[in-house]
Picture 1 (cartoon, rainbow, N blue to C red):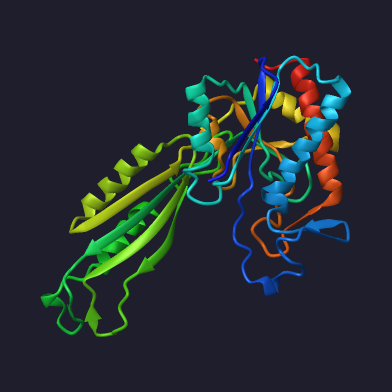
Picture 2 (cartoon, rainbow, N blue to C red):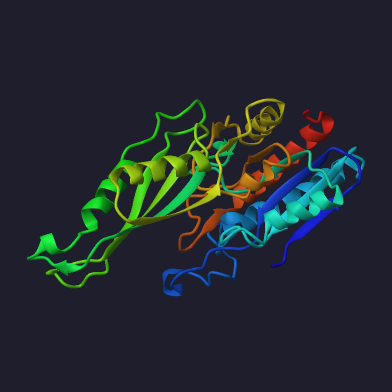
Length: 333
């Protein structure tokens, strides 16, 4: 896995920009109007896989640093670093996590970090992400005894128990949300029996579910609650739980205020503070320093003909330059 950490300067504060260069597969190329990896410009848009998620954001920040340095003649009283990784869209085990561990062993400090993920839905500058929900995946397998559907008394059908367990943990929201987070809402994602016959009671049934949870919960607490729900229904079952990230929040304060001010100055739009969406590498960085996310419009990410408007690339470059100018003029605590 190829990762990059590059630092300009040796003094603190160290302003870090984080991003990833890996992308999701393009899907059928017949669904693209251009070569998905050519990066073609068509009618004022740059089209290509990763244009907005998130190679465009990385390019904007690099260009912003160049403009910022030209304005201050390289004398800005701190450091600017890039943390660019190649394992965000996949398992996320050989990218940011490994680089952060390496930095910690070297005694390298990050003071604040901006992740350039696309954060707006329609217009640049709509939203800054100040946290993310946690994500828990569950795989539940319930065991029974196979038999003829005409003789249910001689079998043990696992499907009704599976449905009761799934109803207990993956139907209703777990809370009403918080000031900065949506409600925690479990979702069943698949139910599999693998039974092609209509007259056979299956020996086992399996279901998967996902919970995107807010900061009222943590992975361990949810796992214990899920197991208790299953135990109450009873019977033989197996439950595998994986927590890919905990909920976190970077509370509003000087750091977030700086990003809001820079965004409003560059776009004329005051951004909302948001925690929606999936997970990002910010969930790892928050253990090291205050982190937030601010980037391009993401309405086409992971779609065919993923694209970004050229005018947005220019505007985001200026926005990032404004962030750097304000940051080094008066670094937030």
